[in-house]
Length: 443
Image (cartoon, rainbow, N blue to C red; front, top):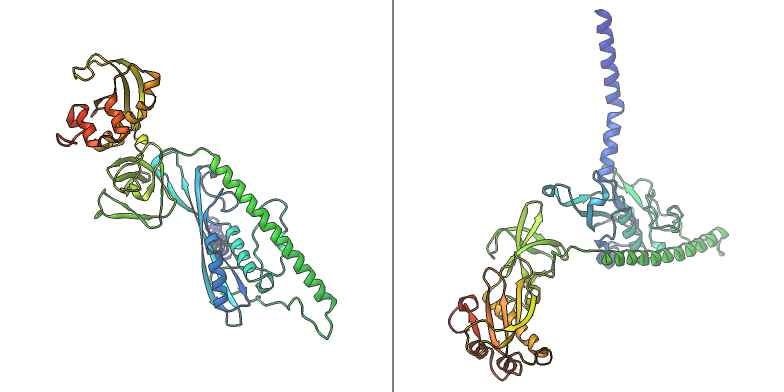
């Protein structure tokens, strides 16, 4: 019993020592991986550094052609992530010992498609430092390579095969700052590349100058090759298949509302080119999926609507102009008119069968009349040659709220030649039933 007690105390002592020696190191390693910040010190004024940041700001955010090589290993399979987007933020501050410190952090988000749709949505991924190092490189290029100094190096991995090794950069160095350490104590500006100790330039300084020129040429070549590489990836992405029910947001800070009303609760503000799946449309509103089971409403005028959904007209923001995307002609035939309407009774007519392209789309009487008008005008162009005996055109809407409109060919031609007004044309037609097309007796 006593021996067991001694063994138990020894085991507890070993666990205690392990927790004191190794556990803090493990926790520190995890914290460092999560909070690493990339920075560089430049021997310029704070104003000059801010100007350089502004010049590269537009190119420090945007879509990623691929997530591979830009993020740390995610918990989920990489092929489930799509629509990668990054945005770098900057902090510019004066250094007491001279120069200006520029810190940058890249936020990367991507759409995660989970096998269970409920868990799908946008997620934030951890950057591996490549984006941060690139924007710091471009700031250094704006300030000229000789202006960038720093201490300690944390260079990004090569962007593509054949690029110069990261450790060959002598004029532009970066530092990886860990939480709580402040500015790297080893950060010192090296001697100027053209420094001299006497009237003549020393051989070592001349060598450094030539080395700097060579590195500058290599950096410019790398920049050109990188630009071509990204353009090729973007071209591949554009050529890939794209879902046909996604609508893209036109402007930043577009509100996504809880209900189709201007006074409804704002669920979120979308960024330009954010894409949402369109579930349906209701008048001037589009019903979209935000994430998982979350739904919202966006005005159609604020979206680049996909094919199959009507979009806003340039002249009338609230009306539908792309009616060809709402309806389609399913069948055409020439046959004697079977109705009792006297102008066409028993005469051969051209019948156009029309159906909605999407059952989720809500259409109005005005939409149906506008599309019927387009069918009349299109059919009349070739009707005289293909079916010279046809006396009229009939448009049949094959839907739950359907109906048909019949018109003599002479009336259609008068409308096409602008001899009669549209209102007069509808009065010359047979609308069966009228309530399917008109709010009142007269159009």
